[in-house]
Amino acid sequence: MGRGVGGQAWRVRGADDSWFVKSTADDPQMLLAEADGLHALAGCRAVRVPQVLAAEQRGGEAYLLVEWLEFGGKTAQAAAQLGERLAAQHRNFGARFGWRRNNFIGATPQFNTLSDDWIKFLREHRLGFQLRLAAENGYRGVLQEQGARLMESLPAFFVGHVPKPSLLHGDLWGGNWGVLTTGEPVIFDPAVYYGDRETDLAMTELFGGFPPEFYSAYDAAWPLDAGYRVRRDLYNLYHVLNHLNLFGGGYRLKAEDLMTRLLAEAS
Image (cartoon, rainbow, N blue to C red):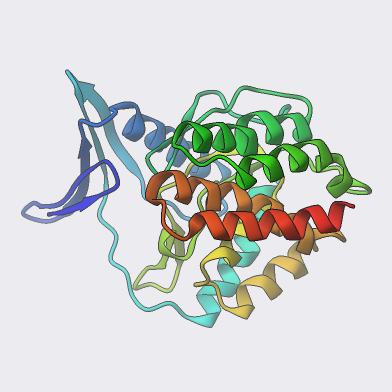
């Protein structure tokens, strides 16, 4: 048994098989949203995800039952397969940005109201939301001043870049992918929505855990647009602000440093 963000997890063994069970009473919608995201990613038939066997709420608690997967070591070959398959996943387009339901980024609510305007969606439901939450948590001053200026400057980052609404994993850091004993890459713990595919790539660079072969394979399958290196910091600001709101500490300085660099690029 283990404990993660907002709940507990078990391996349940049967006579001939095993299953992975998660439960939470913090917010039952967390696991129902996770099941919804796994179903969506599985429907792409691109990157392998754990098969959802059951997800339900009973009273104030929710349960998620998925297949048990045996993991081996991460390899360069598996990373390359992941890059190629992620590019294929990102070619699953929606009509609008957002998602059919709200979900969570870690333990923080993630609002996915559908929008035809990516910049507006990013301003209102990603960066703007995290900045408002930070103000409620007492992080004001320079952080909010820079944030307000950055929200006004967002169009400067999208000159010549018109993203399509790609189906995203949404929380693709190094701890949310693995390699099966068969050598096949797998992703899990999603926070799905339709957005700029660059947001998934950006997060893979935030905390590391993805080797060069992953990026080479993705770029060979679908090269990134010019300006990605700057937008990478913009998209990762969302996750840095979320970590500030969840954990505090040095994330405030990291967020302010990111905004300083971004404002210099926008000027």
